[in-house]
Image (cartoon, rainbow, N blue to C red; front, side):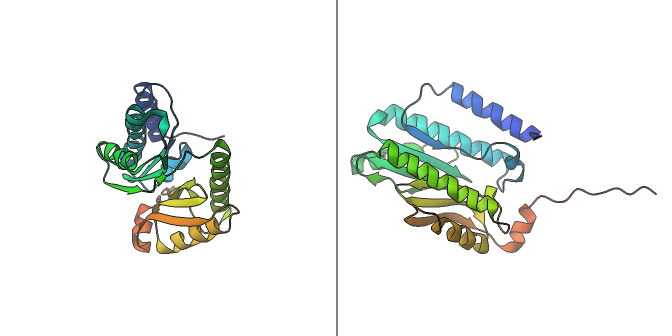
Length: 212
């Protein structure tokens, strides 16, 4: 049986509130953070996790309102650094998407990887989703990696890795991703931290009281 922490429940409630105020759906894909018990060991603070969700939701809403269905844009935020992927018909729309997202509260940096070409097909998107799932499964299977330290995005065969990780973890995750069929290229959009800093971020074991 799985239990949700108070923090997870609060984040879920806030996300629901944000969704309720954003209107209908459109072909904008929002790369949300991992939800559930994994959030308790996320290397971002609970506040930053909420901010990332808000950035993705509000960014998608802004793009949808201004560009409608003529573009296919993915927005993924990790530690307030935003990755933009997808397709737009021209350079002006590519720049407009970046400008819209840059105005969203809490955004500190943007990596714009949007392609200027026709929207990807449903088959292509399904293939990308399958590749992403296989990479995440590979990370979970690896006994020397914290899978929930990464956010994985795949677009037209290019896989993007996001997260706060050590150099060793970055290299190991890249190795796993490159071994997955369908991955043509791996791009690292990572915040590299030291091993000592990682120790400070990991959950501390609960103290055990001994009876005298």
